Length: 212
Length: 396
Image (cartoon, rainbow over all chains, first blue to last red; front, side, top):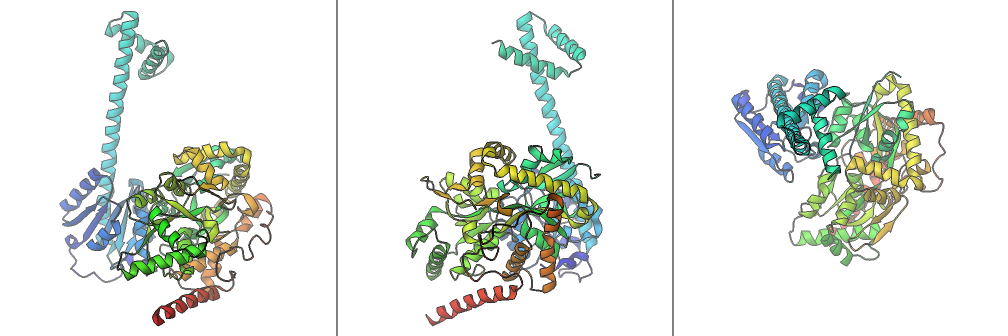
């Protein structure tokens, strides 16, 4: 509290030297895969003191014990509100300041929010030292998001295939069609009605259910 | 009106009622405003996304609107609050074990918050005497009435909330789980989470927030001041839509439609929402019910119209609990966050709330009446009360 300007970077270097590898970084993320991706990235970039915190119930205790310089947190984690309490506690050893406090770099803040990550940074750290961490975070979060979207799409495609296969089965049985004939009928109907074949297949299944 | 589609953030709680009803039951559309409601998981996110412009407006804890405008605990972003989404609506819930301990030490009716606060003080003393871990209570955010109401209540029993107990921030959906596994002994939170704990048999509602203070502004409809200045027509249309929705939500014949709309957004049973809206809450697993029509006020008795006394009260709590020093400038800034002028301009002057419903506009159950122009006096009264208590323990 009342330390809003500390993160602007005009303060002194923290003790422990200026090498980035000395920074202690905590990752608070309920997605273990994403946290692992992020941790790998940070280690590749030469940060050795990285710790992942997944559970929420003793989050503050873990953070106090680790005493990190930077806390990276998933924006979709409700635990953010717990972290905010640290601003209010006088016994906090160091007071991490939310990334949003430094409004001079709106573009990178927007990029971070879009990617879904937020950072808390101990006052006095130079901004340049943080930028590389944040950029890495943003790209890893985005990469994770892309992977997940691809995975969802693949799953979706698989689901569609299943629906079409089941509809084919229904038509083959009801109309004594071959597999090719069943598929051709659905494709033709889809084209005529300007719909997707999966929608036609779904209608076939619904109708079959009704006529049972 | 050229603001395009409005993005408005909210946290899934019953006191977002006016906003949810306005959007989902067509009141914003009737005013020609296109709104996308965005569900959020944390107050920090709501505040930050409002601050950096990802949201045009938000369902916000009233104390966060004040703190944000003063730059306390975070970056300073001036906020305007031209509409109260809800007054009151919180409750203090404790574990059955703590309730039994309080009841056995109660010197009177445990439903009286002064009696329960003294009982709590005895439990706290006993735990200290046998070196037990202090009691832990959950609340939703450092700048919240949940925090301030717990502290106010405890302090009337002579407890120092910073020394004698632990107060921890917990996201509302985690409250019940934390009470179940014993990480907290009680909590103060809004609807529907107290009822969820009661139904699960792991919590007992000890007090409604309105028994601690009769009238506090819990959630506001908040916008950045700069946005409000750029889009006065859109803001006025939003206020009208919210006012119509709030009036609609308070009519008994609309209860089912309103509960269903809110329940849909929250992902809970409509019946649970209905309890909060009607102020009829099951308080214990055995089925005991407590009714209070002040439990959550959305459009009644001038509830929606911003009252600068409420902003002064919030600022007084911020100062009392050491979150910021006292200054006349800050008080004036805090009061300027609440904007009855914008409300009046949009919907026409609302009737003032019932005269005498509580003398000072707050109706705290203990202490002298609150005087917005003497916050120093408010702080001094409570400090002296605590000092008196300390001397007593030294003598003993």
